[in-house]
Length: 126
Image: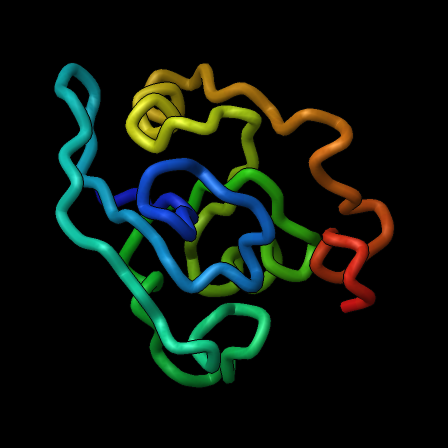
């Protein structure tokens, strides 16, 4: 299965999934180490925050997107595309994918998100 990890620096799991434009895509399965198969470096208009939902998107082919934080809007938009959005406190992309596959991915730290406010969850007013 393919799993995308939001990573603005291609080294750590980053937050604000709706505005993320860089993703590491891993091929992963139980019993084997996740293998990075692609890096997405998308233009601003392809961030989910800006994207026209009627068009195809590069993240459509993944089963899940892992990020440090994501608002209700991002989660709903990804779900409408058949992609599960998961947030976590894990900062290592490979460890996050391994933990997701194992069902042990740690939830985000309470201070890292504010999904109850609605919008993107980052206090930016969106």
